[in-house]
Image (cartoon, rainbow, N blue to C red; front, side):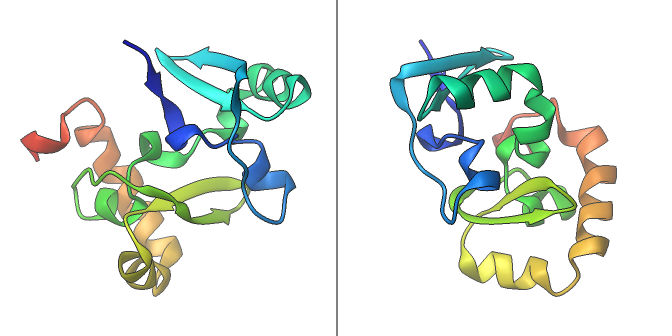
Length: 124
């Protein structure tokens, strides 16, 4: 039972491309029990060398959700990079709310994350 992270997007392409690209089954790295797909061996190696650089904040859950103590499954197409960290949000409407106070929301989310990280979305 493999879990595919970031809906199959190559996480390195969020940082290096105009728009993120989907990886393929030819280039797979497993981190923390999750399989991540990459577009090239080079990108896979970059991820393996420093996963924390590329992994989305809050386990890939919605950044705004985390700021209000919830875990919403996020859409990788709705993302921002803030201080070289990748943040996903639920949808464009939620992202617009999050964007009104990005720094404040990140702070709230990081505080909440300490409590909710190990919980299932349905428990919150």
